[in-house]
Image (cartoon, rainbow, N blue to C red):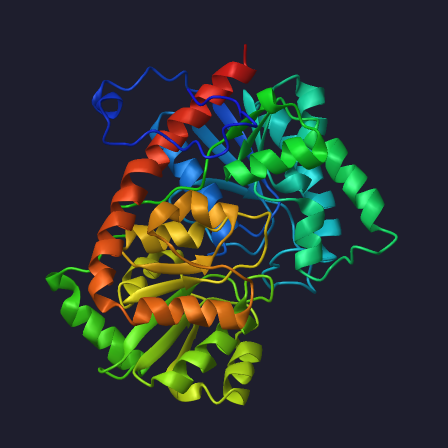
Length: 424
């Protein structure tokens, strides 16, 4: 089972999946009725949703019964059982990150959750995001069932990153205190990185023995390197996207936002294109696609950049295989960065900022920008682009690291062990 977080062991990672232990008969899992609280428009093809989806699928494969409560407007995937709260006539768009719309959506989700725990009594409440943990705490007290909180980043830091809250605002301190209170309610907390576990102990005073770091993982069968059998389909996709045949393709997959480093990436791309024109940036994601397309145009990048808009998760592996190298310019210091694992499993050498989360995933095989500036990021990317002989070496090493250390099957077994602990 996973060990609780140890503050002096922050570099610990999951055991390699190809170790002798992995090939033994898997431990017996006590199957449970799990109610997942997902206060988001699940499924919406980005990082937080990918973790919810892959966890649910992997836990279901172990025999757990999984029901998910979510906002309206998401799409159904993987045959998962999803119960949605009512929406409102004036908001049919997908809400990403912090939003005032969440206030009434959380209220409606709370009412639906009260009915759900009576109609389908769970053995475990598994809450995602702080709103889910708050709702889960009330349900946990009412039904006397354990609450597990899947922590994917600081609430107040996320609100600041999204421009929804300013650090000097009068609301910041009350919301920080609310976050602190929520963090101390669950019976156990799963974190998407060791950095997040350290944050909970250091800044919010959560007892380390309640925290279980279970990093984001990747489906390495879905996300895989290109093979000769892929070439015809990839050539057709490249042509459809208007990417010239003679271009080195740099891929980005994820949300488009300032805290994700999207403007910074475009500024770095301009610096690269000033020095060589045989590079093409394939930027896959949403929202604000039109805004960033205008930014790229203002930088004179239009001939060297293609925006795909929102890309279904099921199609992401195919489009990532178009890439030669990948970039992860995320600026947020508190959230995970699951896109890096997708790059790794696809065998793509990757440039990222030198953050604890990036280091946890990429290890010694990443190419790091030391400063969080466009100039530093362009410098790191230029270094990688200038050494094409290193790409296969880095790609194979990163693929091996993803397969060995970041398996959803292993993560599901560890989550099941946490369920066992909190159920005693």
